[in-house]
Length: 123
Image (cartoon, rainbow, N blue to C red):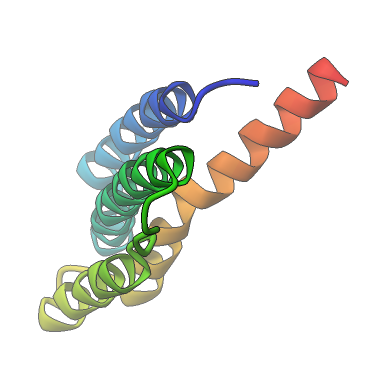
């Protein structure tokens, strides 16, 4: 099975391509608010995945060493999502709120799809 860092690295590469497509959509279409929301949400989604990977590695180390297990950063990831939505609300004329929330979920959907493809190929 792939290591957590390898999965995260592949996910980041996919997200860079998606962000480039969103930037092109923002620059060349009349749906700039929607694409701005997708970009903001995706950036915060990548940040949330980074937090999760970092905390999971710490969790794995703590379990292996038999030390006290820390949290997985749920509150920090939740606060990050709230910050993305707050930015979308604050700049509502430039950023579409629903697309921001959709952008927050894109890394998780990609992670799920990547794991399904991995298991279909290897099992």
